Image 1 (tube, rainbow, N blue to C red):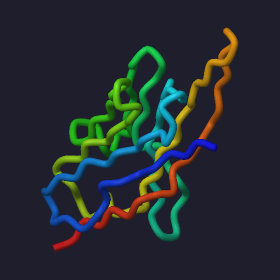
Image 2 (cartoon, rainbow, N blue to C red):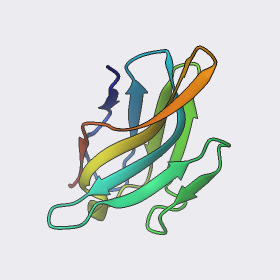
Image 3 (cartoon, one colour):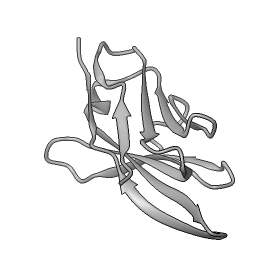
Length: 123
């Protein structure tokens, strides 16, 4: 069984920074692509940032220039660096990854979600 384990959330003042991490619990699964989503109370879950197999990135307009998505293949971990945080960034953040697994020359891909981590931006 493989899991995506998130960390890095917390309480930060407006203008501050946080870095979220999302790690695959087994090293034989690779992170082929990843997205970070967030859900604020009473709102729909929205895509914040994504990174493709070819490392192309996309961002929601509301976070462009402030958030950066990346991944470290050696550590099997994805990241969301969040700078210049605003109160409206307050939400539970979820990572979603396409995990690759190879077995006897065949490659399989599976879609997994992290457990979510709370980010609160408040003075």
